[in-house]
Length: 303
Image (cartoon, rainbow, N blue to C red):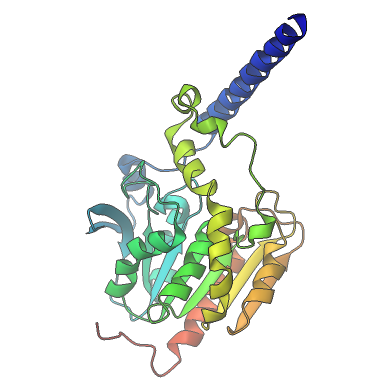
Protein backbone atom coordinates (compact mmCIF):
# COMPACT_ATOMS: atom_id res chain seq x y z
CA UNK A 1 0.00 0.00 0.00
CA UNK A 2 2.83 2.37 0.82
CA UNK A 3 4.39 1.73 -2.59
CA UNK A 4 1.07 2.46 -4.34
CA UNK A 5 0.74 5.63 -2.30
CA UNK A 6 4.19 6.82 -3.33
CA UNK A 7 3.44 6.15 -7.01
CA UNK A 8 0.10 7.94 -6.68
CA UNK A 9 1.82 10.99 -5.25
CA UNK A 10 4.43 10.94 -8.01
CA UNK A 11 1.71 10.72 -10.65
CA UNK A 12 -0.21 13.61 -9.12
CA UNK A 13 2.90 15.73 -8.85
CA UNK A 14 3.86 14.80 -12.41
CA UNK A 15 0.46 15.86 -13.74
CA UNK A 16 0.61 19.08 -11.75
CA UNK A 17 4.05 19.74 -13.18
CA UNK A 18 2.75 19.28 -16.72
CA UNK A 19 -0.18 21.58 -16.00
CA UNK A 20 2.05 24.22 -14.43
CA UNK A 21 4.52 24.16 -17.31
CA UNK A 22 1.77 24.42 -19.92
CA UNK A 23 0.25 27.35 -18.04
CA UNK A 24 3.60 29.15 -17.85
CA UNK A 25 4.33 28.56 -21.53
CA UNK A 26 0.84 29.58 -22.61
CA UNK A 27 0.95 32.78 -20.61
CA UNK A 28 4.37 33.63 -22.04
CA UNK A 29 3.05 33.09 -25.55
CA UNK A 30 -0.15 34.99 -24.86
CA UNK A 31 1.60 38.02 -23.36
CA UNK A 32 4.66 38.24 -25.57
CA UNK A 33 3.41 37.41 -29.06
CA UNK A 34 0.52 38.87 -31.05
CA UNK A 35 -0.74 36.65 -33.84
CA UNK A 36 -3.37 39.01 -35.26
CA UNK A 37 -3.71 42.78 -35.37
CA UNK A 38 -7.00 44.47 -34.52
CA UNK A 39 -8.83 46.46 -37.19
CA UNK A 40 -7.75 49.63 -35.40
CA UNK A 41 -4.09 48.57 -35.45
CA UNK A 42 -4.32 47.74 -39.15
CA UNK A 43 -5.93 51.10 -39.93
CA UNK A 44 -3.20 52.90 -38.00
CA UNK A 45 -0.49 50.90 -39.79
CA UNK A 46 -1.71 52.10 -43.20
CA UNK A 47 -2.71 55.59 -42.07
CA UNK A 48 -1.64 58.22 -44.59
CA UNK A 49 -0.46 55.71 -47.18
CA UNK A 50 -1.73 56.01 -50.77
CA UNK A 51 -2.67 52.32 -51.07
CA UNK A 52 -4.42 50.15 -48.50
CA UNK A 53 -5.56 46.52 -48.67
CA UNK A 54 -9.26 45.72 -48.49
CA UNK A 55 -11.00 42.90 -46.67
CA UNK A 56 -12.87 40.32 -48.72
CA UNK A 57 -14.93 37.35 -47.54
CA UNK A 58 -16.53 34.34 -49.19
CA UNK A 59 -18.03 31.04 -48.14
CA UNK A 60 -17.37 27.46 -49.16
CA UNK A 61 -20.14 25.10 -48.02
CA UNK A 62 -20.97 27.44 -45.16
CA UNK A 63 -17.37 27.88 -44.03
CA UNK A 64 -16.52 31.58 -43.96
CA UNK A 65 -13.15 32.65 -45.35
CA UNK A 66 -11.43 36.05 -45.12
CA UNK A 67 -8.48 37.62 -46.90
CA UNK A 68 -6.86 40.99 -47.54
CA UNK A 69 -6.21 42.15 -51.08
CA UNK A 70 -4.55 45.11 -52.78
CA UNK A 71 -5.66 45.03 -56.40
CA UNK A 72 -4.54 47.71 -58.85
CA UNK A 73 -5.59 45.66 -61.86
CA UNK A 74 -2.28 44.00 -62.70
CA UNK A 75 -2.24 40.73 -64.66
CA UNK A 76 -0.47 38.69 -61.97
CA UNK A 77 -1.16 37.59 -58.40
CA UNK A 78 1.00 37.01 -55.33
CA UNK A 79 -0.65 35.03 -52.53
CA UNK A 80 1.10 35.02 -49.14
CA UNK A 81 0.13 32.14 -46.82
CA UNK A 82 0.98 32.36 -43.12
CA UNK A 83 2.12 29.63 -40.76
CA UNK A 84 0.72 28.54 -37.40
CA UNK A 85 -0.41 30.30 -35.35
CA UNK A 86 -0.90 33.37 -37.47
CA UNK A 87 -3.12 35.48 -39.66
CA UNK A 88 -2.97 37.46 -42.88
CA UNK A 89 -1.02 40.28 -41.22
CA UNK A 90 2.06 38.12 -40.87
CA UNK A 91 2.74 39.67 -44.29
CA UNK A 92 1.35 43.13 -43.58
CA UNK A 93 4.65 44.85 -44.44
CA UNK A 94 4.52 43.32 -47.91
CA UNK A 95 1.33 45.31 -48.63
CA UNK A 96 3.26 48.48 -47.83
CA UNK A 97 5.87 47.83 -50.53
CA UNK A 98 4.96 49.44 -53.86
CA UNK A 99 7.39 47.23 -55.75
CA UNK A 100 4.95 44.39 -55.04
CA UNK A 101 1.57 46.06 -55.62
CA UNK A 102 2.78 47.97 -58.68
CA UNK A 103 3.40 44.64 -60.40
CA UNK A 104 0.75 42.23 -59.11
CA UNK A 105 -2.41 41.79 -57.13
CA UNK A 106 -1.33 41.17 -53.52
CA UNK A 107 -3.38 38.72 -51.44
CA UNK A 108 -2.95 37.35 -47.93
CA UNK A 109 -5.64 35.06 -46.51
CA UNK A 110 -6.42 34.04 -42.98
CA UNK A 111 -5.93 30.29 -43.17
CA UNK A 112 -8.94 28.22 -42.01
CA UNK A 113 -9.57 28.64 -38.30
CA UNK A 114 -7.39 31.75 -37.89
CA UNK A 115 -8.07 35.48 -37.99
CA UNK A 116 -11.50 36.06 -39.48
CA UNK A 117 -11.66 32.74 -41.37
CA UNK A 118 -14.15 30.90 -39.15
CA UNK A 119 -11.96 31.62 -36.13
CA UNK A 120 -11.72 28.72 -33.74
CA UNK A 121 -12.69 26.11 -36.33
CA UNK A 122 -9.33 24.83 -37.62
CA UNK A 123 -9.02 22.39 -40.51
CA UNK A 124 -6.35 19.74 -40.06
CA UNK A 125 -6.59 18.37 -43.61
CA UNK A 126 -4.22 20.17 -45.97
CA UNK A 127 -6.34 19.01 -48.89
CA UNK A 128 -9.42 20.63 -47.34
CA UNK A 129 -7.51 23.82 -46.49
CA UNK A 130 -6.57 24.10 -50.15
CA UNK A 131 -10.17 23.54 -51.25
CA UNK A 132 -11.20 26.43 -49.01
CA UNK A 133 -8.45 28.67 -50.42
CA UNK A 134 -8.95 27.76 -54.10
CA UNK A 135 -11.65 30.42 -54.81
CA UNK A 136 -8.99 33.11 -54.30
CA UNK A 137 -6.92 31.66 -57.12
CA UNK A 138 -10.00 31.33 -59.30
CA UNK A 139 -10.80 35.02 -58.83
CA UNK A 140 -7.43 36.65 -59.52
CA UNK A 141 -5.27 36.60 -62.66
CA UNK A 142 -2.37 34.42 -63.71
CA UNK A 143 0.50 34.08 -63.35
CA UNK A 144 -0.16 33.24 -59.71
CA UNK A 145 2.72 32.72 -57.29
CA UNK A 146 2.02 31.28 -53.85
CA UNK A 147 4.41 32.14 -51.02
CA UNK A 148 4.05 30.03 -47.88
CA UNK A 149 5.88 30.31 -44.58
CA UNK A 150 6.30 27.40 -42.14
CA UNK A 151 3.02 25.42 -42.19
CA UNK A 152 2.03 27.67 -45.08
CA UNK A 153 4.78 25.88 -47.02
CA UNK A 154 3.03 22.51 -47.30
CA UNK A 155 -0.23 24.36 -47.98
CA UNK A 156 1.16 26.03 -51.12
CA UNK A 157 2.83 22.77 -52.16
CA UNK A 158 -0.49 20.96 -51.82
CA UNK A 159 -2.18 23.73 -53.82
CA UNK A 160 0.28 23.10 -56.66
CA UNK A 161 -0.49 19.37 -56.42
CA UNK A 162 -4.27 19.68 -56.35
CA UNK A 163 -4.82 22.76 -58.55
CA UNK A 164 -2.09 22.76 -61.20
CA UNK A 165 -4.15 24.97 -63.53
CA UNK A 166 -4.37 27.71 -60.88
CA UNK A 167 -0.75 27.81 -59.70
CA UNK A 168 2.16 29.01 -61.81
CA UNK A 169 4.87 29.11 -59.15
CA UNK A 170 5.51 28.47 -55.44
CA UNK A 171 7.99 29.85 -52.92
CA UNK A 172 8.32 28.01 -49.61
CA UNK A 173 9.96 29.76 -46.66
CA UNK A 174 11.17 27.48 -43.83
CA UNK A 175 8.51 24.94 -44.80
CA UNK A 176 7.55 21.83 -42.84
CA UNK A 177 7.46 19.24 -45.62
CA UNK A 178 9.14 15.99 -44.57
CA UNK A 179 7.00 13.69 -42.41
CA UNK A 180 10.04 11.85 -41.07
CA UNK A 181 11.42 15.14 -39.74
CA UNK A 182 8.29 15.91 -37.73
CA UNK A 183 8.44 14.93 -34.04
CA UNK A 184 6.50 11.77 -33.25
CA UNK A 185 4.43 13.77 -30.82
CA UNK A 186 5.42 16.76 -28.74
CA UNK A 187 4.77 15.82 -25.12
CA UNK A 188 2.54 18.82 -24.43
CA UNK A 189 0.12 18.51 -27.37
CA UNK A 190 -2.15 15.80 -25.94
CA UNK A 191 -2.39 17.38 -22.46
CA UNK A 192 -3.30 20.66 -24.15
CA UNK A 193 -6.50 18.97 -25.34
CA UNK A 194 -7.52 17.83 -21.85
CA UNK A 195 -10.66 19.68 -20.65
CA UNK A 196 -8.89 20.78 -17.47
CA UNK A 197 -6.10 22.34 -19.52
CA UNK A 198 -7.66 23.62 -22.74
CA UNK A 199 -9.66 26.34 -21.05
CA UNK A 200 -6.46 27.77 -19.58
CA UNK A 201 -4.46 27.85 -22.82
CA UNK A 202 -4.82 30.84 -25.19
CA UNK A 203 -7.36 29.99 -27.86
CA UNK A 204 -5.03 30.70 -30.77
CA UNK A 205 -2.52 28.20 -29.34
CA UNK A 206 -5.23 25.56 -29.05
CA UNK A 207 -6.27 26.22 -32.64
CA UNK A 208 -2.68 25.79 -33.80
CA UNK A 209 -2.34 22.59 -31.78
CA UNK A 210 -5.35 21.07 -33.55
CA UNK A 211 -3.65 21.25 -36.93
CA UNK A 212 -0.04 20.61 -35.91
CA UNK A 213 -0.98 17.43 -34.06
CA UNK A 214 -2.05 15.91 -37.41
CA UNK A 215 0.67 17.45 -39.58
CA UNK A 216 2.90 14.37 -39.82
CA UNK A 217 -0.02 12.31 -41.09
CA UNK A 218 -0.97 15.02 -43.59
CA UNK A 219 2.59 15.22 -44.91
CA UNK A 220 2.64 11.45 -45.38
CA UNK A 221 -0.48 11.76 -47.56
CA UNK A 222 1.43 14.17 -49.79
CA UNK A 223 4.37 11.84 -50.45
CA UNK A 224 2.99 10.23 -53.64
CA UNK A 225 1.87 13.63 -54.99
CA UNK A 226 5.20 15.45 -55.15
CA UNK A 227 5.82 14.29 -58.71
CA UNK A 228 2.66 16.17 -59.73
CA UNK A 229 4.32 19.54 -59.08
CA UNK A 230 5.67 20.86 -62.38
CA UNK A 231 5.72 24.63 -61.74
CA UNK A 232 8.84 26.57 -60.73
CA UNK A 233 9.43 25.88 -57.02
CA UNK A 234 11.79 27.66 -54.66
CA UNK A 235 12.66 26.73 -51.08
CA UNK A 236 14.50 29.07 -48.72
CA UNK A 237 15.59 27.37 -45.50
CA UNK A 238 17.66 28.56 -42.55
CA UNK A 239 20.32 26.12 -41.42
CA UNK A 240 19.90 27.28 -37.80
CA UNK A 241 16.12 26.85 -37.79
CA UNK A 242 15.14 25.28 -34.46
CA UNK A 243 11.39 25.17 -35.19
CA UNK A 244 11.37 23.42 -38.57
CA UNK A 245 14.19 20.98 -39.29
CA UNK A 246 16.72 22.34 -41.84
CA UNK A 247 16.57 18.94 -43.53
CA UNK A 248 13.32 20.06 -45.15
CA UNK A 249 15.40 21.88 -47.76
CA UNK A 250 17.19 18.73 -49.00
CA UNK A 251 13.90 16.83 -48.69
CA UNK A 252 12.20 19.24 -51.10
CA UNK A 253 15.17 18.94 -53.45
CA UNK A 254 14.73 15.16 -53.55
CA UNK A 255 10.94 15.27 -54.02
CA UNK A 256 10.55 18.01 -56.64
CA UNK A 257 11.55 15.65 -59.44
CA UNK A 258 9.43 17.24 -62.20
CA UNK A 259 9.64 20.91 -61.27
CA UNK A 260 12.21 23.59 -62.09
CA UNK A 261 13.57 24.18 -58.60
CA UNK A 262 15.96 26.18 -56.49
CA UNK A 263 16.92 25.32 -52.92
CA UNK A 264 18.50 28.15 -50.97
CA UNK A 265 20.12 27.19 -47.66
CA UNK A 266 21.07 30.09 -45.38
CA UNK A 267 23.90 29.52 -42.95
CA UNK A 268 23.14 30.78 -39.45
CA UNK A 269 19.59 31.83 -40.27
CA UNK A 270 16.55 30.88 -38.17
CA UNK A 271 12.86 30.21 -38.84
CA UNK A 272 11.60 33.76 -39.29
CA UNK A 273 12.58 34.28 -42.91
CA UNK A 274 9.71 36.51 -44.11
CA UNK A 275 11.02 39.24 -41.81
CA UNK A 276 14.71 38.42 -41.22
CA UNK A 277 15.36 37.84 -44.92
CA UNK A 278 12.93 40.37 -46.41
CA UNK A 279 15.32 41.60 -49.15
CA UNK A 280 16.13 38.04 -50.26
CA UNK A 281 12.46 37.01 -50.25
CA UNK A 282 11.57 40.12 -52.24
CA UNK A 283 14.32 39.55 -54.78
CA UNK A 284 13.35 35.87 -55.16
CA UNK A 285 9.62 36.49 -55.56
CA UNK A 286 9.98 39.40 -57.99
CA UNK A 287 12.52 37.51 -60.11
CA UNK A 288 10.14 34.58 -60.43
CA UNK A 289 7.27 36.95 -61.16
CA UNK A 290 9.24 38.63 -63.94
CA UNK A 291 10.12 35.29 -65.51
CA UNK A 292 6.53 34.07 -65.43
CA UNK A 293 5.08 37.32 -66.79
CA UNK A 294 7.50 37.11 -69.71
CA UNK A 295 5.93 33.83 -70.81
CA UNK A 296 3.44 34.29 -73.68
CA UNK A 297 0.51 32.55 -71.94
CA UNK A 298 0.88 34.26 -68.58
CA UNK A 299 -2.15 36.60 -68.77
CA UNK A 300 -5.60 36.39 -67.25
CA UNK A 301 -7.20 33.03 -67.81
CA UNK A 302 -10.81 32.60 -68.81
CA UNK A 303 -12.91 31.07 -66.04
